[in-house]
Length: 475
Image (cartoon, rainbow, N blue to C red; front, side, top):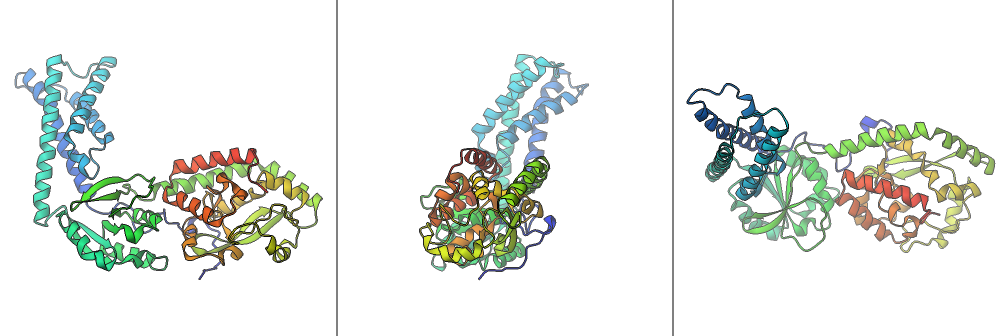
């Protein structure tokens, strides 16, 4: 059930986890066409909203300097972009939001004009006229685009996205009817919930990529225990819509939309999928390199202490199971006697974990005197920075477990193998060795994977420092 090839030691060739872009470099769909159209129409209309009063003021002669109009128009476009009026969904046609944003932008223009060299020779009446024209032109432009797009969608000539449906067979006809009511999707295919199973996911995403699918509709029953799969869709540049959602806490950034009259949750992917993941990998590599350079004296001191305390090597390399079930050697400072693995079989009866998946003993007789100290401050984990450099691990992620633990996994536990293992994670900052129920560990791993963000990684990194300094749950 587990693949055990030796993991590669090349950063560039390390396996990718579910947050990394595999099939797409950009978000799928014609979003760029919509965005370009909106930007171009808004810019032209806003330019004329400022140009017409200027043109009138110069008595039908062209204004001598149009650069000021370009700058003021750019400020308005920037404000509209920051307020999300170019995003997919109903925000594009939220006219009240557009009016508020353009009014706010007008205030910015006045402040900018006051503190710098005046851009416009603007009187109060002229500013009011420009604001009213800006609001009127933009709202009318958005309305015209919306009406035109809806007409073209009904004709199936433009603005229709290839879509795919994943739901149980008994729900398929009903979901298709809901989706078809939107007049903006061309259904490229359907499949059942098994398409998202661990053994079928890769084939499913290859199929979606071949079909050029831009959006996927997934019934809640098909994904309720697989919310982490949304990362796979986003990494492939595919927008996900969850239908018939039950009440369950979801901490990811989602948007409530209406599909064919029923509410659903939509997970919109960024323009460049996986950007955050690659920032994470670059941060991991740079942090590990810098920390290894700065902490080199600490490594020397720990190595000498281990050598003086007990016979045996300084480092301990154990086979652990990482991303996608790949085996690799994890580096640690040796904290146990050299025959610790043989002794573990004799100590299995003393295992304190409830379900026996993990092996934990509070007063483990295999641990050396120096080992107890460096475990207390988690210093034994420092050599795993080399695993981070090799691309086998990340700073933050689910802890990699030995084969002994993996052999006791139930099917639902393999979720933690979908992302790069880490030196620290939510498990470590939520009790460390005091968490003796493996289901708790899985729940913490699920929470991390489903709600991952760069900010969450930084938060866990900071909490890890505090937990280590306070010696919480370490033995």
